[in-house]
Length: 449
Image (cartoon, rainbow, N blue to C red):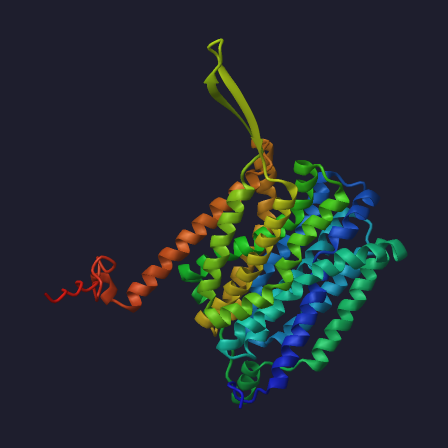
C-alpha cells in the first residue's frame, strides 16, 4: 500500500523518470553557450564585455525565474509548467539560429535562460509524488540531471563541426519540443492538482505561497545553496583557467581535470539524497561543510618560498636556508574531486530540508533557494576576477570560498543549537551539563583486609 492516497509505485517511477529526463535535456540547453558562444562571438565581432553579457544572461535569468516558476508550479502543477517552459525555451533556441543582431541575441538568451528554471519545476512536481522519508533520494536522482552540462560538452562540439552552430541550435530546439510533447503525453498531474480538481478547491494565491520567505531559515538554506550549487557552477567555469594559469598545463588537459571535478558534482547528488533519507540532511550538511573547509584551506595555500636564518658560520653570518612549498598538481586535482563530491551531497541535502519544513510551499521556497544558488554562479566568477586583479594570487579564490563556508557552518550550527533548546527547554537550565554527568565514575572498590 502506498503512503500517498491513489499513488502507485509505477506513478512514482513515471514522474521521477520523465522529470529527470526533461531536466537533463533542459540543463544541456541551458549550457549551450559554452560551445556555440565562441562561434557567435567571432561571427558578430563582439567585444569581451558584449560576449560576457550574452553568456551570463541565461545564467542570470535562469536563476531569477526560479522563484516565479516555483510559485506557478505549486498553483497549476508541474505537468503543465514543464511543458510550457520547454516549448517557450525551444522557440528562443530556434531564434538563435535566425537572428543577426546583438540585441535580438540577448532577447533569445533571455528566453533560453528559462531552461535553468526547469529545476524548480521538477523539484516541486517530483516532491508531490513521494512521501517525506523518500523525498531525499527522489530529489537527488532528479538533481543528477545536471549531467546535461556534460552531454553538451561532449556532444555539441561534434554537432557544430557537422552542421554549424546554427544547425546545432535548431537540433537542440527540436529535441526540446519532442521532450515537451513526450512529457505532456506520458506525465500525470500530481496528486495535489488532482485533488484540487476533484474538490473544486482553489490553489493558494501567490501571496500565500510567498509567505514563508519571511522566515530567516529559508534564507539560511539559500546561503547553503549559494555555496554547494553557485560555487559549483563558478568553479566549473573557473578551474580550466586556473589549471592553465597556475600550473601551466594545456587547455585540453585543463578541461579534463576540470571535468574530473564537475562530474562527481552531478552524478553523486542521488547518493546525497539517499544519505539524507537514511542519516538526515543535517548530518550530510555538516559532512559537506567540514570536508569543504579542510579541502579549501589546503587549496587556499599559495606557492610559498621560505628563507630561514640558520646557525651562524665561521664568518659570524647566519646560514640562509631556503625551501619552497606548494600544492602539486596531482594533489590539487584529487582535492578538487573530493570537493565536487561533497558539494554534490550538499546540494541534495539542502533540497531534502525544503519539502520537510515547507511541504505546501516547495515551489516558492525551493524557487528562492534555487534563485540564490543560481545567482552564485553569476556573482562568484565576477568576484573571482576582481580578487585576482587586486591580489595577483591564484589561490585567493579558494580563500574567499573558505570564508563563505566558515560563515555558513557557524550560522548552521548556532541555528541548530537554538532549535534544540526551543524543542527541549530543559536544556537551557543545564548550563554545566557536560561538567556534571548523570553517573560519575564510581569510587574504586576497597580491598578487604
